[in-house]
Length: 408
Ligand code: ADP
Image (tube, rainbow, N blue to C red; front, top):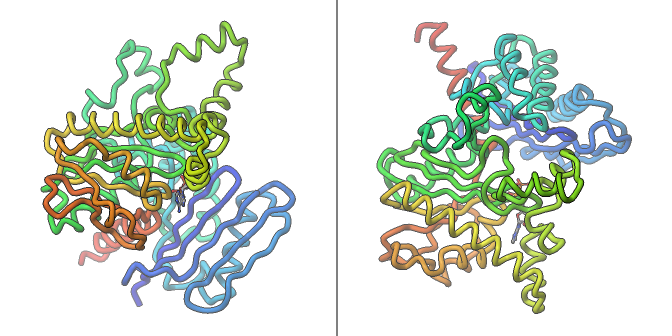
């Protein structure tokens, strides 16, 4: 029997999200999350999708190892345990692959050491990803573990887009450059957009707007990323739920010198207390729209700043790409917030882009066009599916390797 299942693990600092997929058709067999790991009252929510009811429990889950063991136990209750011969591989989301990892990679000791060496540029994410990788390896040492990097899709960016204009020696010494994130989503959505247009990814130029709590834009030429809005870290670029996105770097010196703030305080300010939450106290676009409807000026201004930044990136990527075939909205805000899509595209008629209000108002699950039929540039809503993309890349790599071993 050829194993056809892939377990996708997304290990964050205090949570582990997981999905088990059957790669014959990409369907989900189970999914769940362990939250508040190491915090006394951790919570596990497990949803078997083919048999049984969702289960939830709270209790102490001391660390990621305990969390993964709990996940394995829940899966086993549905006959989907990690020891199943049908499990082909585990695919891990790894946030930072630096310049080294341009593709999904089967994990061995050397790869683990290299991911570890990237911790200084990804102190918030890579340590948790590593714990997930090590624990899963310990649980199933014989099973291929594949790392799929958030940065990989962006490694095709030309140096002109990837480098900051700062002293080259200093930049190289500290590996300071623009890496970009959400790459798995940008890869998936740009391909799905080409498919929606009935064209090959190589033949289309797409601007992808991944608007979740974290948000990033990318310019994709013929299936390859040529620019993206996040940089050394996920802080650069668009206005996000709690992150400022672009600011003049001198704001930081000013806060240190005049505001007397420490590095950590400024880090927290820009990453956790800025963006929409910093501007109006809310980071949920639904709540912001509700407040705007009630005439709340602060919410209105937060929305306008969000849209203004988004428009600037859309305009910049038109210029970078030269020709744009499609603009694709994805993630929580992009997929659900019609007013954001309408406002971001408003006024771009001269650039060939427009939104049809009736199509934009339709709520649906799948990829869909929201531009008028005669529009030069297609505007689309394309739901992202990072887990499916991680599983697909993992399964393809494992399949390729096993064919290489068996000589098929
Ligand atoms: P994350 O970056 O955490 O993966 P998501 O892609 O799930 O984020 O997006 C979460 C955000 O999506 C929420 O903070 C909220 O602003 C927005 N959102 C979700 N559903 C809706 C909706 N129906 N209308 C408007 N915004 C929504």
